[in-house]
Length: 457
Image (cartoon, rainbow, N blue to C red; front, side, top):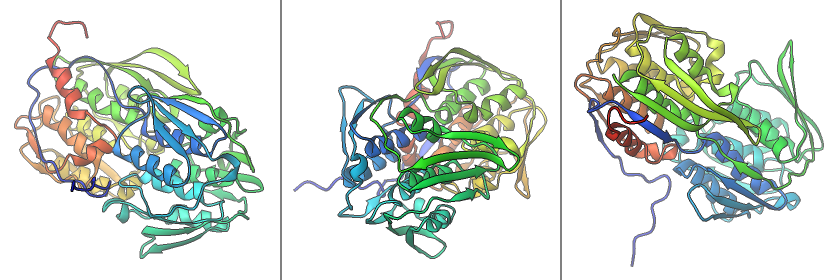
């Protein structure tokens, strides 16, 4: 009898020796589809009436967990004829069915928090869990406002998974001002508001990624956004019906950040990354790298289903230190670890401000990023929620350390990029979680190093 397939929570650690680059990075590549948009495309396709078609979907472990959950809830989700091509037949106004088993979201923090909002306004009971990393992450920022809408939750100590969700058919629309800017919390409340009678209002202290607003409009749901003295105010009125559409998912800018920064750091590199999402609320890293003196151009910019996309063209650059304001954090919250690698080779001391949100990501990313830097010969320190990094002035960083990734895919990929730009290379303890967002990451870096120098980039 064959062994059962491993669950998303049962990965085998994969250690990796991140060696210095053997050659410049050159060529044109594409990165996997945007993870944030992919999660939303599958969920809203499930909520919609009719058949939604998707191209460019990220087929990483996180999105696969969302697909499994939507199937358990009654949607028909099938793969199309090629990579990234999917079809979703939604349950529409009849609502999701009560799942017969636990919904295991693996490492998908976005999927788990959005799912809590999606299930909230329906009369069912569901049990939600995840892998060891996700079970450490607090859920109160979502369960507290959803509780005000009439939803019942039972969690482990510290408001952590596993979690029971007792939905309600009599959901109350609320007006809620986010204490901390969070696209996940905002999106969970908007998904819950779709089946509540009346107007749901979310006020965010600073703008966060607006993929949910854009996609709801694409599915035919009116959403208004207004900047006021209290902050950015988002309104929608329920109950609302979503109508099936076609979705073209752009490449994930958070994934593009890794080959992009690698190209800036490895001498002689010249890289184009095609079909990347350029939503203005996701481009804080591009703004910051330009401030550092990066040779970085945008090409072939166009619109696709409400989301801007285009080509990033990056060449090796002499970088200078930067002082990143805290208000920029929502537009680049996932890119701070890889930005820290760029700062480690810049001229001068950089200051990355207001990073409290990093403490509750897949790991304590602030502490883990600091350890990655210090363990490989980079002088860095934390004061409050600010990270200071003393750069090498363009010289390769020493390297030589062993990096503990804490099951954090972005930290693992940042370490690999540091290895490319180091003197000695370094060892990464676990790359198994990279597939949650970037299947084929190492292969793509290898492809870029094999492009002949002098060939067309």
